[in-house]
Length: 407
Ligand code: ADP
Ligand code: ASP
Ligand code: MG
Image (cartoon, rainbow, N blue to C red; front, top):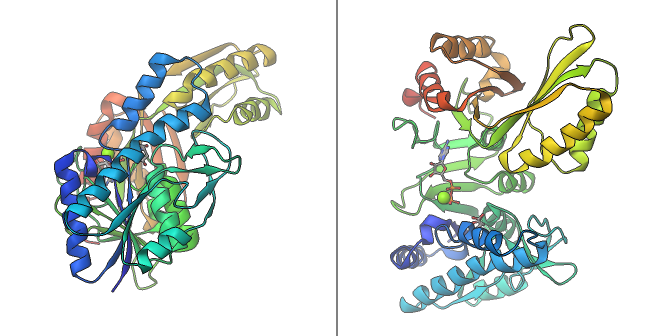
C-alpha cells in the first residue's frame, strides 16, 4: 500500500467528463489499496481567463486582490472533484490552500511556501477520506490569501508529498511524461523512463514547462520522487529521481526550445570597469530575471551588451536600460521579441568533448544563425530567430539520434 500525492493540471480537469475520469482513476487506485491525496489546478484555461478579466477592470491590479481572484479558479475545481468522488461512494473533502495548512510569505502573486501544517490532511488520510487540495495557494503570515505563481500547483503537490512523507508525487498532465523534446513539435520524440533532478532542472531552465521549475527544485532538495504521467491514457510515465550510480550518463538526453524570452541590446556602452555591474544591479533590483548575457569585443573604447529577459518583463527592462544608457553614455537600446533559445541537455557532455561543435555545425548546415551562446556543465543553449525554432529542434533531435535512444 502506497501513499500517493496526485496532482492534476488544468487540461486534466478541464471539463465535467475529465473530472469524472479523474474520480474513476482515484477509485481504481483505492481498489488497488493505495491511499491518495489530490492536488488540482484550475479548470482548463481558467487562470488565463481570470488574469484577462483583471486586466480589463484595472490597470493597477493590486497583488492582494489578484490573489483573491486567481485562487478562485482552484476553489471551483476542488469542490467539483470532491463531488465526483462522492458520486463514486468515496468519502472526500476539499481544502483551500489555507485550510490545507500552506503558510506563505506576503509576496502576492508569487508567494513562497514557509511551512506546511498538514495535520488536517493527515487526519483525513487516517480516516480513509480523500483530501482534495487547491493547488498554488496558501495563507500569508499576514492572514491574507496568496497565490504561488503560474505552475504553482506542481509545487503544492511536491510540498505536500514531502510534508506527508508520501511514497511518490504523481504529476498528471496532457502528455505521457517527459520527452526528448516537445512531442507537439517533433512527433517522433521519445518518452524517457527516468531522468535525474539535475537534468530535469536544466530542461526546465531551457523551457520545458513540465514539471514547473520551482517544484523540481523543491523535490530535489527534499528527495521527493516525481512521476510525470498522463491523465488521458493513465500509462506509467517518467520518473524524476536522484542519480543512480549504475546509470550511464547519456551524452544528450533532450533538445528543448523556449520562445518566452526577448533580447535586449545596449549599444555603444563605454568599455570601463563597473558599467556592466551598474546596469545588471539595477535590473536585479527591479526583480528582472536576466538569463543569457553576451558582451562583444570592444572597438574604439565602446562595446555592445546583449541579454535576454522574459517577454512579460521586457518593457520594464527597456525602461531600466534607457535610463542607465543615458547615465553611462551608451548609444542605443534595442529590443527583439522574435527570438528562441534552443538547448541540448545531457549529463554525459561533462566528459565528452565535441557536443557544442556538433550543435553549431548542425545549425550552420541548416542555415540557422546563432545570435548568442551560453553553457552550463550539462547544457548548451543558442539564441536563434524564432522562425527557425521548430526546424532547429527537429534537426538537432535527428542529429543526436534521440528518437532511437533508450533510457
Ligand atoms: P499542465 O497544464 O498539465 O500543468 P503544461 O501545459 O504546463 O502542463 O505542460 C505540458 C506541455 O508541455 C505538453 O502539452 C507539451 O506540449 C509541453 N512540452 C514541452 N516540452 C516538453 C518535453 N520535453 N516533454 C514533455 N512535454 C513537453
Ligand atoms: N492554475 C494556475 C496556473 O495555471 C496554477 C497551476 O495550475 O499550477 O498557473
Ligand atoms: Mg497545460
